[in-house]
Length: 264
Image (tube, rainbow, N blue to C red; front, side):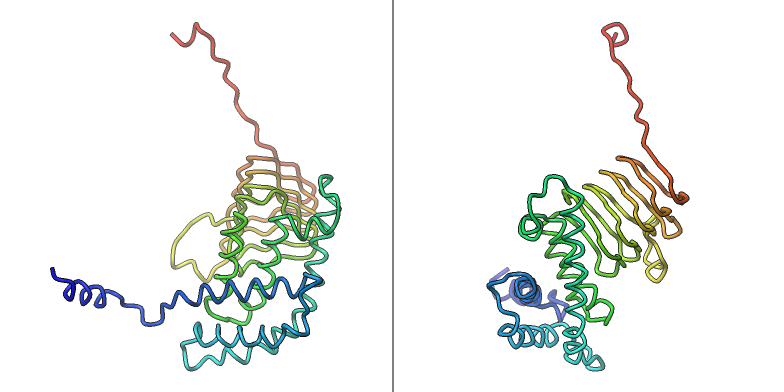
Protein backbone atom coordinates (compact mmCIF):
# COMPACT_ATOMS: atom_id res chain seq x y z
CA UNK A 1 0.00 0.00 0.00
CA UNK A 2 1.16 3.51 -0.70
CA UNK A 3 1.20 6.18 2.01
CA UNK A 4 -2.07 7.79 0.88
CA UNK A 5 -3.90 4.45 1.07
CA UNK A 6 -2.53 3.76 4.56
CA UNK A 7 -3.64 7.19 5.76
CA UNK A 8 -7.12 6.71 4.30
CA UNK A 9 -7.51 3.29 5.94
CA UNK A 10 -6.42 4.65 9.31
CA UNK A 11 -8.90 7.52 9.01
CA UNK A 12 -11.66 5.04 8.16
CA UNK A 13 -10.97 3.17 11.40
CA UNK A 14 -10.85 6.23 13.67
CA UNK A 15 -14.52 5.73 14.45
CA UNK A 16 -15.00 7.69 17.70
CA UNK A 17 -15.72 11.32 16.81
CA UNK A 18 -15.67 12.43 20.46
CA UNK A 19 -12.49 10.60 21.50
CA UNK A 20 -10.13 13.44 22.39
CA UNK A 21 -7.15 12.38 24.49
CA UNK A 22 -6.61 16.04 25.27
CA UNK A 23 -9.48 15.57 27.73
CA UNK A 24 -7.26 13.23 29.75
CA UNK A 25 -4.38 15.71 29.92
CA UNK A 26 -6.67 18.61 30.78
CA UNK A 27 -8.35 16.57 33.52
CA UNK A 28 -4.97 15.82 35.07
CA UNK A 29 -4.01 19.51 34.98
CA UNK A 30 -7.33 20.47 36.60
CA UNK A 31 -6.87 17.79 39.26
CA UNK A 32 -3.34 18.95 40.11
CA UNK A 33 -4.37 22.59 40.43
CA UNK A 34 -7.45 21.72 42.49
CA UNK A 35 -5.45 19.56 44.91
CA UNK A 36 -2.79 22.23 45.41
CA UNK A 37 -5.38 24.98 45.78
CA UNK A 38 -7.05 23.08 48.61
CA UNK A 39 -3.92 22.03 50.50
CA UNK A 40 -0.76 23.89 49.53
CA UNK A 41 -0.22 27.01 51.66
CA UNK A 42 1.72 28.61 48.78
CA UNK A 43 -1.06 28.07 46.23
CA UNK A 44 -3.69 30.76 46.86
CA UNK A 45 -7.25 29.54 46.43
CA UNK A 46 -8.65 33.04 45.85
CA UNK A 47 -6.37 33.69 42.89
CA UNK A 48 -6.84 30.21 41.48
CA UNK A 49 -10.64 30.03 41.49
CA UNK A 50 -11.01 31.85 38.14
CA UNK A 51 -8.34 29.59 36.63
CA UNK A 52 -10.05 26.49 38.02
CA UNK A 53 -13.35 27.60 36.54
CA UNK A 54 -11.64 28.21 33.20
CA UNK A 55 -10.17 24.70 33.27
CA UNK A 56 -13.52 23.25 34.31
CA UNK A 57 -15.28 25.01 31.41
CA UNK A 58 -12.75 23.47 29.04
CA UNK A 59 -13.46 20.02 30.51
CA UNK A 60 -17.18 20.64 30.00
CA UNK A 61 -16.56 21.52 26.36
CA UNK A 62 -14.45 18.40 25.80
CA UNK A 63 -16.50 15.87 27.77
CA UNK A 64 -20.11 17.01 27.41
CA UNK A 65 -20.80 16.46 23.74
CA UNK A 66 -24.46 15.65 24.46
CA UNK A 67 -26.28 18.94 23.67
CA UNK A 68 -28.98 18.12 26.23
CA UNK A 69 -26.46 18.19 29.11
CA UNK A 70 -25.51 21.64 30.39
CA UNK A 71 -22.31 20.54 32.12
CA UNK A 72 -20.87 24.02 32.55
CA UNK A 73 -23.67 24.85 35.00
CA UNK A 74 -22.29 22.20 37.40
CA UNK A 75 -19.36 24.39 38.43
CA UNK A 76 -21.26 26.61 40.87
CA UNK A 77 -22.69 23.62 42.74
CA UNK A 78 -19.29 21.95 42.76
CA UNK A 79 -17.68 25.09 44.13
CA UNK A 80 -20.23 25.19 46.95
CA UNK A 81 -19.35 21.59 47.87
CA UNK A 82 -15.57 22.12 48.11
CA UNK A 83 -15.46 23.33 51.75
CA UNK A 84 -17.32 20.22 52.95
CA UNK A 85 -15.08 17.96 50.85
CA UNK A 86 -12.02 19.61 52.38
CA UNK A 87 -13.41 19.08 55.89
CA UNK A 88 -13.84 15.37 55.16
CA UNK A 89 -10.32 15.12 53.76
CA UNK A 90 -8.85 16.77 56.84
CA UNK A 91 -10.63 14.11 58.92
CA UNK A 92 -9.13 11.42 56.66
CA UNK A 93 -5.65 12.87 57.12
CA UNK A 94 -6.10 13.04 60.87
CA UNK A 95 -7.31 9.42 60.97
CA UNK A 96 -4.15 8.32 59.17
CA UNK A 97 -1.93 10.37 61.48
CA UNK A 98 -3.70 8.99 64.55
CA UNK A 99 -3.68 5.34 63.46
CA UNK A 100 -0.26 4.94 61.87
CA UNK A 101 2.62 4.91 64.39
CA UNK A 102 5.03 5.55 61.51
CA UNK A 103 3.59 8.99 60.77
CA UNK A 104 5.70 11.70 62.36
CA UNK A 105 3.45 14.66 61.55
CA UNK A 106 0.15 15.53 59.90
CA UNK A 107 2.14 17.29 57.15
CA UNK A 108 3.79 13.97 56.32
CA UNK A 109 0.36 12.46 55.66
CA UNK A 110 -0.61 15.19 53.20
CA UNK A 111 2.75 15.16 51.43
CA UNK A 112 3.85 11.53 51.44
CA UNK A 113 0.96 9.11 51.95
CA UNK A 114 -0.39 7.63 48.70
CA UNK A 115 -3.49 6.43 50.52
CA UNK A 116 -4.42 9.98 51.45
CA UNK A 117 -3.82 11.24 47.91
CA UNK A 118 -6.03 8.50 46.47
CA UNK A 119 -8.81 9.31 48.95
CA UNK A 120 -8.50 13.03 48.18
CA UNK A 121 -8.88 12.59 44.43
CA UNK A 122 -11.71 10.10 44.97
CA UNK A 123 -13.66 12.60 47.10
CA UNK A 124 -13.12 15.40 44.59
CA UNK A 125 -14.21 13.11 41.74
CA UNK A 126 -17.18 11.62 43.62
CA UNK A 127 -18.92 14.99 43.81
CA UNK A 128 -18.76 15.29 40.01
CA UNK A 129 -19.89 11.67 39.65
CA UNK A 130 -23.01 12.46 41.70
CA UNK A 131 -23.80 15.27 39.28
CA UNK A 132 -23.40 12.86 36.34
CA UNK A 133 -20.51 14.79 34.84
CA UNK A 134 -19.31 12.43 32.10
CA UNK A 135 -15.86 10.82 31.96
CA UNK A 136 -13.99 13.39 34.06
CA UNK A 137 -14.58 11.74 37.49
CA UNK A 138 -13.26 8.43 36.17
CA UNK A 139 -10.27 10.13 34.58
CA UNK A 140 -9.52 11.84 37.90
CA UNK A 141 -9.51 8.60 39.90
CA UNK A 142 -7.55 6.79 37.19
CA UNK A 143 -4.96 9.56 37.41
CA UNK A 144 -4.66 8.84 41.13
CA UNK A 145 -4.64 5.09 40.39
CA UNK A 146 -1.68 5.49 38.08
CA UNK A 147 0.26 7.43 40.72
CA UNK A 148 -0.62 5.41 43.82
CA UNK A 149 -1.73 1.92 42.77
CA UNK A 150 -5.11 2.56 44.47
CA UNK A 151 -8.18 2.01 42.29
CA UNK A 152 -11.25 3.70 43.80
CA UNK A 153 -14.20 4.02 41.46
CA UNK A 154 -15.69 7.52 41.80
CA UNK A 155 -19.13 5.99 42.31
CA UNK A 156 -18.25 4.35 45.63
CA UNK A 157 -19.78 5.83 48.80
CA UNK A 158 -17.18 6.41 51.55
CA UNK A 159 -17.90 7.86 54.98
CA UNK A 160 -15.81 9.96 57.34
CA UNK A 161 -12.29 9.33 58.67
CA UNK A 162 -11.25 6.74 56.08
CA UNK A 163 -7.75 5.25 56.38
CA UNK A 164 -5.83 3.40 53.67
CA UNK A 165 -2.37 2.28 54.81
CA UNK A 166 0.46 1.48 52.38
CA UNK A 167 -2.19 1.74 49.66
CA UNK A 168 -0.76 -0.26 46.74
CA UNK A 169 -3.17 -2.73 45.19
CA UNK A 170 -6.37 -1.52 46.88
CA UNK A 171 -9.49 -1.88 44.70
CA UNK A 172 -12.86 -0.37 45.66
CA UNK A 173 -15.71 -0.96 43.23
CA UNK A 174 -18.36 1.44 41.97
CA UNK A 175 -21.23 0.38 44.23
CA UNK A 176 -19.20 -0.28 47.39
CA UNK A 177 -20.47 1.45 50.54
CA UNK A 178 -17.96 2.21 53.30
CA UNK A 179 -19.20 3.74 56.53
CA UNK A 180 -17.24 5.84 59.05
CA UNK A 181 -13.86 5.12 60.70
CA UNK A 182 -12.92 2.22 58.42
CA UNK A 183 -9.29 1.15 58.03
CA UNK A 184 -7.98 -0.94 55.15
CA UNK A 185 -4.50 -2.06 54.18
CA UNK A 186 -2.63 -2.79 50.97
CA UNK A 187 -4.04 -5.27 48.49
CA UNK A 188 -7.62 -5.18 49.78
CA UNK A 189 -10.34 -5.76 47.17
CA UNK A 190 -13.96 -4.71 47.62
CA UNK A 191 -15.24 -6.24 44.42
CA UNK A 192 -18.11 -7.83 42.56
CA UNK A 193 -18.99 -11.50 42.84
CA UNK A 194 -20.05 -11.63 39.19
CA UNK A 195 -19.02 -9.53 36.21
CA UNK A 196 -21.75 -9.04 33.61
CA UNK A 197 -22.86 -5.94 31.72
CA UNK A 198 -26.52 -6.46 32.61
CA UNK A 199 -25.61 -5.96 36.29
CA UNK A 200 -24.51 -2.35 35.74
CA UNK A 201 -27.53 -0.92 37.56
CA UNK A 202 -27.36 -3.27 40.55
CA UNK A 203 -25.35 -3.13 43.77
CA UNK A 204 -22.42 -5.40 42.99
CA UNK A 205 -19.91 -4.51 45.70
CA UNK A 206 -19.94 -5.00 49.48
CA UNK A 207 -20.98 -2.75 52.35
CA UNK A 208 -18.48 -2.10 55.15
CA UNK A 209 -20.01 -0.77 58.37
CA UNK A 210 -18.49 1.53 61.00
CA UNK A 211 -15.13 0.87 62.69
CA UNK A 212 -14.14 -2.11 60.54
CA UNK A 213 -10.49 -2.98 59.96
CA UNK A 214 -9.54 -5.01 56.86
CA UNK A 215 -5.97 -6.26 56.73
CA UNK A 216 -3.69 -6.80 53.75
CA UNK A 217 -4.82 -8.75 50.68
CA UNK A 218 -8.28 -9.57 52.00
CA UNK A 219 -10.93 -9.97 49.30
CA UNK A 220 -14.59 -9.17 49.97
CA UNK A 221 -17.04 -9.71 47.13
CA UNK A 222 -20.72 -9.25 46.38
CA UNK A 223 -23.39 -6.59 46.60
CA UNK A 224 -25.26 -8.39 49.37
CA UNK A 225 -22.15 -8.90 51.49
CA UNK A 226 -22.15 -6.75 54.63
CA UNK A 227 -19.25 -6.59 57.07
CA UNK A 228 -20.78 -5.73 60.43
CA UNK A 229 -19.58 -2.86 62.56
CA UNK A 230 -16.46 -3.23 64.72
CA UNK A 231 -15.32 -6.34 62.83
CA UNK A 232 -11.75 -7.32 61.99
CA UNK A 233 -11.02 -9.06 58.69
CA UNK A 234 -7.61 -10.70 58.72
CA UNK A 235 -5.05 -10.70 55.93
CA UNK A 236 -5.71 -12.91 52.89
CA UNK A 237 -9.29 -13.65 53.96
CA UNK A 238 -11.78 -14.38 51.17
CA UNK A 239 -15.41 -13.45 51.88
CA UNK A 240 -18.51 -13.74 49.71
CA UNK A 241 -21.09 -13.63 52.48
CA UNK A 242 -21.92 -11.29 55.34
CA UNK A 243 -20.47 -11.38 58.82
CA UNK A 244 -22.26 -9.95 61.90
CA UNK A 245 -20.99 -7.00 63.95
CA UNK A 246 -18.00 -7.57 66.26
CA UNK A 247 -16.69 -10.48 64.19
CA UNK A 248 -13.12 -11.64 63.67
CA UNK A 249 -12.42 -13.39 60.38
CA UNK A 250 -9.03 -14.93 59.71
CA UNK A 251 -7.46 -16.94 56.92
CA UNK A 252 -5.91 -20.18 58.19
CA UNK A 253 -3.02 -21.18 55.92
CA UNK A 254 -2.13 -24.82 55.43
CA UNK A 255 1.53 -25.55 55.99
CA UNK A 256 3.14 -28.66 54.51
CA UNK A 257 6.63 -29.54 55.72
CA UNK A 258 8.62 -31.09 52.89
CA UNK A 259 11.30 -33.67 53.75
CA UNK A 260 13.78 -35.52 51.62
CA UNK A 261 11.75 -38.68 52.16
CA UNK A 262 8.47 -37.41 50.72
CA UNK A 263 10.29 -35.67 47.89
CA UNK A 264 11.08 -39.07 46.42
